[in-house]
Image: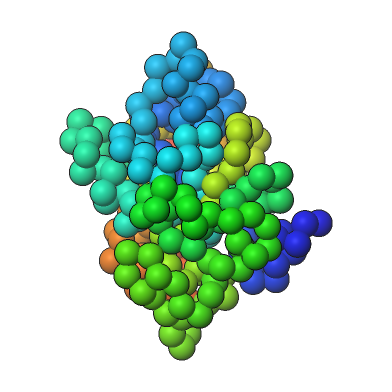
Amino acid sequence: MSDVLEQARARGITRLCHLTKSANLSHILETRQIRPVATLQTAADAFRPADTQRLDGALEFTFLSVEYPNTWYLAQAASRDRHFQDWVVLTLDVDLLATSGARFCPYNSARDRSAGARLGADGFNAMFAPTVTGKVTLRRESGHPSWWPTDDQAEIQIPGIIPLSAVRSVIVRDEKQAELEHFRHAQFGMAVLLPPLVVAPMLFDKYVLSRSVRSGNRPPESPYIPRTTLAE
């Protein structure tokens, strides 16, 4: 077991998260891969970038967060594309932390084009420092859980392609979106590839999520059961 993975488990970290537009989910299922932008730009497949600016300067990496999504980033990215407002959160196996070349940034790396991203245990531990200065200076106050970074926007940068097999679930905003995702992918014969759907409205509200996790409270998540299953 890598030092980073061992320390993550000791902190109680159970998963990683990746935000993407709902419109990209079919592409991920079809290719059975989460691909970094650098790979997508050279492929024939059409894709809709989650972030049209990419000020982080790390196009060969896929960006993940610890335990819960970076909803502050989501609010900014969603405001740039009014035509596609549905997003999903992919939860991923924590073992990805052991990926060779994985980098860790204690704040949103768009601030300095990933200059603060570091490798190994030192980089990982920097996300949990007593004080982190990104856009603002943040501190770990009393009650701050060991599994949550000091800055809500701390990032994990995974190089290369992430296989679909690493995805554990797909979190959506509400029951209506869950029904739509299941119906859409069933129509194209991809329901069997779709990881379990989970409904968790709080994960899409930056203020509510931040207050909850910074005080150590995990927001409720409800598994979605397709109507076809209920009728059987």
